[in-house]
Image (cartoon, rainbow, N blue to C red; front, side, top):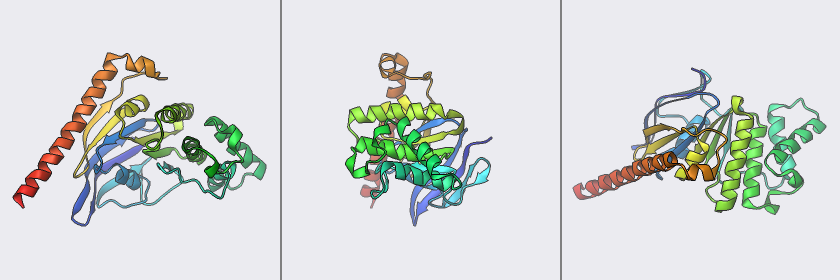
Length: 267
């Protein structure tokens, strides 16, 4: 099977287990939402997949090859945008393009950069610097840069968590449209705390339990694309799935609290 494969993947910091025996197969072209309480290892999982960290046990493979270090095959978008403040938006995107296509002429790079910015609604902001833009615009720029790399695997770590609801909804739509336009080549893992966001974006929702992080549910999302919020919110199936996921998250949190209390009473 091509795509991303995790086999018996575990991660510990000293005596502290963070992730425990994760087994997952994610086919190419799928957009997967990852949910879980704080401490369930969601960000650690992305770091392992990105090659930024080595697992304590187990194996990760992308397209049949082991993941051992960062690679242009994998792009990452963090919550804090991570744009270079001394470069304007066009140059931020151009830098990514030159990483993977160093042979291109300056004019071709500029054209491609402007095209990626236009795709995320920043066509008029190409010469502006990150500090001149709102948080939502900066995050659109970060998404444009990730797509400019052309990486077939894209990891997003709560990229919209700090945004207001309006900009969050806009960027969800931007991500969905850009991903669908390149669907045959883009596998996306999207970490979020928001159940509605996970269902709106994902083909599938993976829920990590905490202490240590482990897969407690792997649910298909049955809604056709393109998706429309009003249609989903009027759907009984959407509400039933949302409730099922919320119940799983709450139950996991309560288990964690009970375990912590038991440990404190025993010590």
